[in-house]
Image (tube, rainbow, N blue to C red; front, side, top):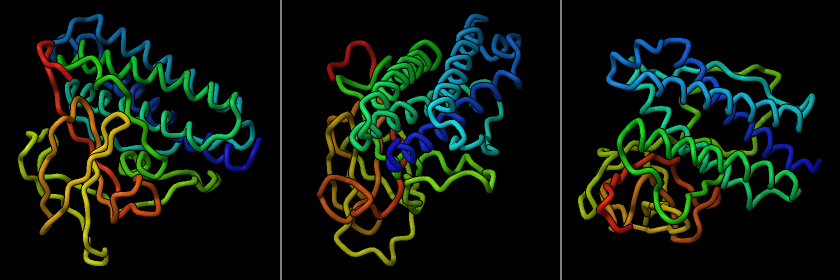
Length: 269
């Protein structure tokens, strides 16, 4: 296996370890009765158990591919404090997981690895769609195209849930970027939001890049504020870049944040 491909698979396994820990952790903490008390039908927990089984299968597949080079699971702090906050976080991280796997495709050389990653990405997208629609009562998909994210962009969205990793784990092929916070994670198109991050050392001009499907929309940042563009749907991502070139590690200024644009069945996206 090529060194580059191995590093990307190690990153993929790191993502799957995190998702598996989240779902298994939520199920260990909350019983069927807890789900019912939170307002969900009893079968919802059963579906989450199936997702837990799927995530365990993803981990096993990648461990088999990597053998002795497989990174171990880390220690996590997901911060959920009830069934509803657990299901909300599960939907968020399943979407991020799908984007992370899709984003690996353009960097991997071995077609057999691409097939494995695509198979996992499709499962992640289905799981995210089920949580978002059947559990959270929002849209079942984000649009005509799913959204790929580069490894460094994906890492910026999950690393804050990781508190510690074994020293024996390999270094991942990512750049650790400053965290980005947005003043409104469910903004209205055309509104102004504040992007909170230390940007003193960054060169001007700076742009917010909004990633939705395969579309990248750029809005200028002035005094830490920017205007939310129109045309975004479902789960999208926003980050800060130094140019309007394709967002990648060369022009990243910050990591990314999740922004939600839910739509009902009457919407045309």
